[in-house]
Structure formats: C-alpha cells, structure tokens
Length: 89
Image 1 (cartoon, rainbow, N blue to C red):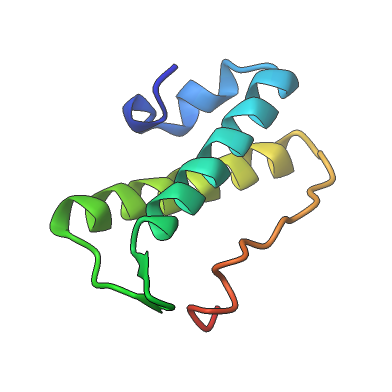
Image 2 (cartoon, one colour):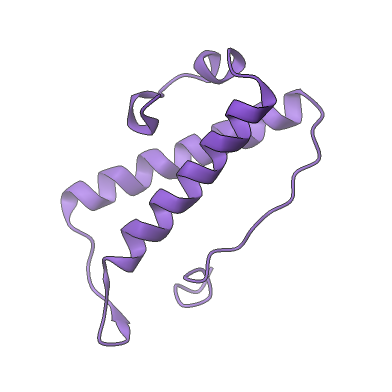
C-alpha cells in the first residue's frame, strides 16, 4: 500500500499489527529521506511546496498510526529522528 494513498483512519483499521508496524517504519523512513534531501552544507534548505505537502501528509499519517495503536492498546516505543534536534523539535 502506498503511504500517500492512505487518507482515512478506517484504512489503518484493516491492517494487522505487523502491517501497521511496517507502515509506521515506512512513514519514519520517508520523513527521514524527505529531510535528508533538504540538508545541504550543514543547514536545512526551505522545503519545496511538494515537499511541504508530503511532510503534512506524513505527519497526519503518523498521528493516525498512533491513534490506531492506542485504540488497540499497543505500547508505543517512539523513535526520534536524527533531524528532530536540528529542527528544534
């Protein structure tokens, strides 16, 4: 399933835990790649409009995954992006 095609919580409810975990990893990896592509000469460059839209979708999808895991009473281990500190998050 393409992560950019997932737009509704109900789509996540159809996934088993392994699929949900794989999706969570894919979202994390995609966000890492997105930010790696903006890291030039030790500084972040401005996101393009397309990159901003992709980042918005990925953030929303990440939140939807957390909601779904919470709904299933799954303990969540958060992994912090290596870029989170650089962006002040």
